[in-house]
Length: 482
Ligand SMILES: Cc1ncc(COP(=O)(O)O)c(C=O)c1O
Image 1 (cartoon, rainbow, N blue to C red):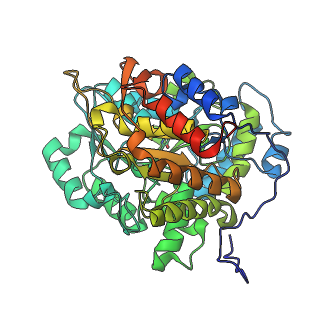
Image 2: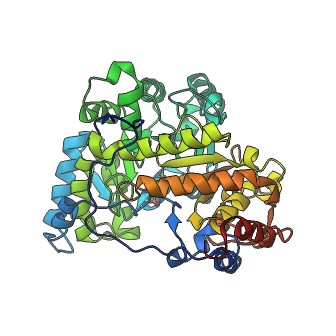
């Protein structure tokens, strides 16, 4: 995305694509949104998409596809075994990452399932810069535990640190000593660290952490699901990489790792996933898990059409014009809201703009899920669907007590190539209104609480009638039809 200069206007992010196919949106009035939120058990995952104006839940599987991806989907080689579409994908991945051993899986968490099955036994440790919900769930399901060693600054919401996803190297050494290298079954570094606000990892940190893992004989794993955002930030924030190509930076990162996996719902701009394994023996020791859980080794539970779309999407994820739109829209959103005083995670990261709910609704105790309550309020006041990323997304401790999250975030995802700047302006405007009425928002409590990944299917209720009062205040301000 070249920095397009304006004559009589401040520079703004500029889309480097045009819209060819559209989906009509509806904005239900506030009364109806209030009812829909009640019906959804105050869980934004339970809303119907048709009742949503701005779906900012996730960037996963909802990025707009290019005409080249759609064209690719017209030439799939349908075969249970030996599909040429699969081999085209493997060739492309080898060209980009330098690894030709590929295990296909239908999405990112399916890759995590295979990794956990292969590596994790009760009592084992997996080291990470930070966990992702599904990753951790797979590891704990197998009796393992996760050590999160992101630098302390990574958890401070307001910062100008360019690489808040970096792992703390001293903590990494200390953790390996404490656990014993043999018990650490792998170290997983997550590019574009999702749960702390889409924050990137520096090239140097990737290299240093992998060198430590190598020294101790620990397998290094890259979760590349958000790699495209991370690559953009390395190029734009690391002066030593400013003149390097995205492909070149990508290859240097890849060269550090033994295993690379990704969700192609993000990296690849389609719907799928894969694991790349450098070592032949290790690769063969994992192969049987694909037909067991996913499908035959040349489709892995994916449609062959999606495999063709992914293959094109990988190249697009390495194009600056494509990968800069998300981060630039996010930076714009974060800066506008930050200037207004709304507590945002700064600097803006990839994937979405993140509101710090701990401060936005500081009167709501963590046990009443401040980020979940804020996400519900935002839907009531704007038809905007964000995602809670805080205590509600955690699982309870073994003794039944709440595991309080280190950050309480509401993520407003900006799927790639989907929204226009006027839609983003609408969101900024509604968040500002809500911030000025934040005292009206109250807490939530569970009415149905699943034991695992409760944020997906759990149902909640407000602790008071605050949603009714909030909707009434919104109608007073904007009228009955907004
Ligand atoms: C960093 C990261 N890893 C893994 C996953 C899981 O991928 P999927 O949703 O395709 O299962 C996600 C999904 O959001 C993610 O952000």
